[in-house]
Image (tube, rainbow, N blue to C red; front, side):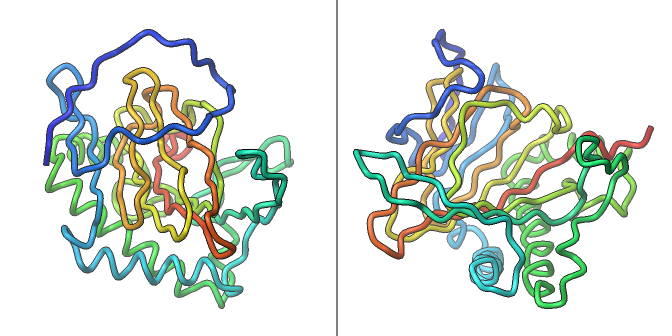
Length: 258
């Protein structure tokens, strides 16, 4: 892997700003370092590092795109390059769900998807994806893994998805404005695994470091999403069957023991 020493730069990007299309400048396997410390990494093709993980991701992606898995579905205009067509978007959350006071649910819970019989193959494959992803973190960023494992000593097993995550969201064709994942545990990382076909865009961009990470098919990004402002560039289908899906695993501070 190449080593990229991230350096802070000045920029005019603000919280909530729309993320425009940006070509990625990180397109090969890379270790991210900041002030001499490894904080994450990028793998362009997980099949070259773990055939098991690649196969599990394919199963999870196939299940997600089937009718067997419940989803929150929406249609939004692509808004790109003069196009006015609608793009199908949906997401599914599994694992632990934090309190939602605005929905009169002031308690922690497990995603309702877990109770859906037809979704069991998806859930099992995603749980295994989480565990296999951890193996790559242990291999390429052991300090990061050990630090997160230490934090998770203060999380009950019932709230864990794998050993170092609480939750997962799978996003289909969903980009994001600039934001910081403030609900995440500090000193911890997210995992973002991409599956795509006949599309471009959907790259994670971090303006603090002038870094935009490729969102190639079968790629994996490990990054501390609580740390910096970041966004996801627009996803542009290049054919009727074009899509970009991400399987995301993250640790929420709502599940720390109090």
